[in-house]
Length: 256
Length: 157
Image (cartoon, rainbow over all chains, first blue to last red; front, side):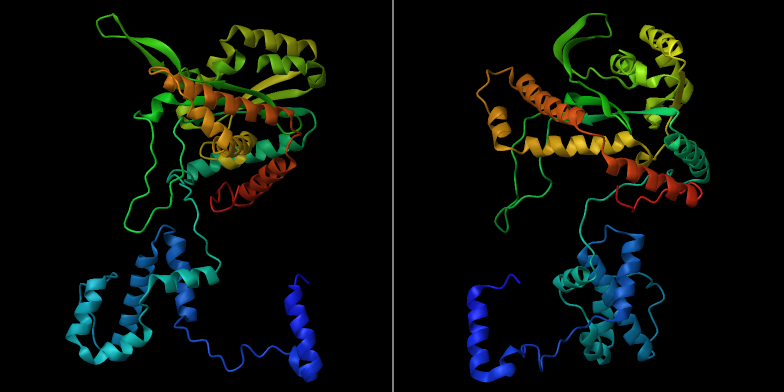
């Protein structure tokens, strides 16, 4: 049961003193959970994040507050300023200043802290994660038609024992590596020391060939090498580290 | 790669060998890629060797913007994760921070990175094929076929 022995001892002692009554958990009796969260909030947050997963807690909070204000205005039959279509914290303040009568109604539904949004998101099992970039051209009609042809072809071939498919790809490794998030005292920035160079020129390319039955059948790395660039006037420049991998060589390198 | 495939020549007997090149637009057009390959002297050696075991060779290109549909991508991710974990190990930190004469620091750091990658590649070479990669690939292929070519990027790889 994974219960600490001390807790188990206490339960036994209480049971001996009070009988079955001691085994009942009364902690939550009479406890009222107050939350401003409504079904509407949950749906709004889901919809907001569906269209833009990178919204900050503050943006979500402001959007929800703006919607709350609009519903208060609607109830009070106060028309919106004609130009107001989007959420704006300053606009909320303007409305409250102009219509003091709605302040108390608004304050009842206003979300004051971003932590509230964070807690709601936790409850909705929304987690913070690395953003995946989907290219705008990834799902165009043309791309989809080409992908459908490819997927149908590949699935047939993968399941056919007469085919031996070798997947070939390459990927870069950059010398610089550090986490994007770090810890530092409040009011101070988290600083990591790195070498003064552009990591693009120091990338190590890794080429791989994979088969579903044999796993990795080929893997090689192409680190940058010291070479001299040829200047416009034909003379050689200073020896420096340069990438040994060229995009144009993708394809031929595999046969090396 | 040619050496690795030549070593498997017996198991390729009578099979149709498909070289599926990554479809990233920066790798060039399919014809360009094919030309690059076929112009290599060793390509002909490989093609001839395949003929001796009655195997056929095809060169294809993956669909663009579809990393989920390439098995290599799953291995790439595995390699990157392994390498990044190793790069954060204390022993590697110590290697990076060794006292190296001025002017050789960068090469030294590149060498350390190279050693990390090589160690991770070695681990992958010795590993049995990952069934989960195959399963995921089939899952995405089915999903794409079902959705008429639409690729859902929100699905975890």
